[in-house]
Image (cartoon, rainbow, N blue to C red):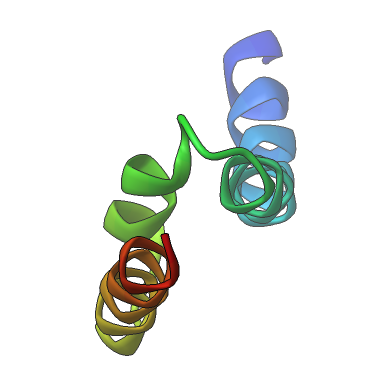
Length: 59
């Protein structure tokens, strides 16, 4: 009984909690690599690399 209840609640909460973690990781520099792994958009990595190159060119 308890196992099926925890499974149902876990199923409902897994997506929102994953999105919260992803957003938090995107906002930190050290966690951005993990946010890319959680993302379904490959262009995030391309944008991030372009931003790093632009910052290094400006220095």
